[in-house]
Length: 451
Ligand SMILES: [Zn+2]
Image 1 (spheres, rainbow, N blue to C red):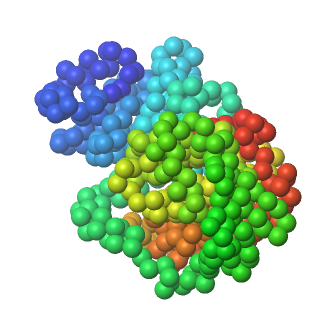
Image 2: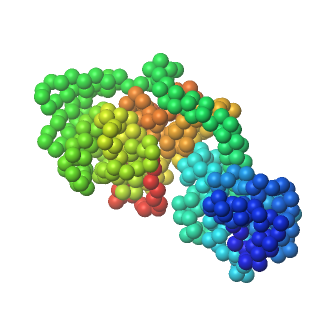
Image 3: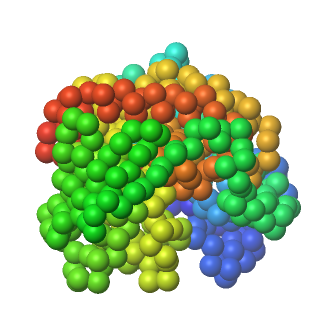
């Protein structure tokens, strides 16, 4: 749907394309305008649309239906052609029209948001470039648009180069999405099957088998276990509503009464306690230092077992009735990995260190390169962004399995894994008061939830 003005729509609507619009309305397509591009000769439609755009001297703003790849691609090209023909910056053009009251700011944002969502852009989608300020700006504007939707204040981004962003982020992103979608469609069944097969990848016989934790447990008393984790000794003591973990230097307490204060019933609470008890000693220590409270829910997106909120320092566990307790271990470790990642002081504020740590990004980016020409199904969850890479590596190092990225980490990211191991070790060697500074002590610059 183009919201430029009513006249424009009326003209298009009365054109020879009307039949198609009707058709798409019948089919329940979300929006009107992009439907014009389906099933008819796209080049001709482009001509018509561009002609109209130029006559009205409009700023081209589109509200796209991202479920329709063909229509979306066409819209993108229209926008590009308009830009090229008129030799103007879309951004300047937009602002000019905006000031004249022709367009509205929210329309532009809505359109960009749709484009980004179409490419599944998330604030942590791409490993970031370190040496390109424009790419960096573009990245953060995208992140802001996604997170704040229509409320983005463009004045916060006065140096933002809209054209750079359009040419380097939106266009390639959309093109890649379309390419993937077409390839995927062709091979959907085969891809899906292979991706599922990869979830059972045998990491114990993989190139990173030496990185898997060596854990032994010895029960010395009814409520006491001596655990060795990679040769280091811990004592785990179960008390009524507490878990005490001791290492050589300190004693750490997990107080379930406090952590699970929001639990709605005893059954939920007991299940979560059992889940927590499956975690190894170092993960329990991280939990005791990094997480302020645990929420329990029974509803969530497909496949999600946990969520971490870095501002409230909250772990949410999604309980599924038919899910065995031990299935949760790696997923909950993954979330605690996010908490560890968020507690580093690198940038002077609480955010995911992995997204800012240049060395980490450099290593991960380099290894990511090798995935470029590989089939889609080889990219597992860890490649979604630096935060997820960190959390998946953490889970792998701490439990012997990442949530669902064993194959990709073992075959493509051995150095990243090793680097995460080093970060974790360094962090654990810090004095406790330096290490944990989430929750109320964090500066509330931002908030987004992480799966
Ligand atoms: Zn995650």
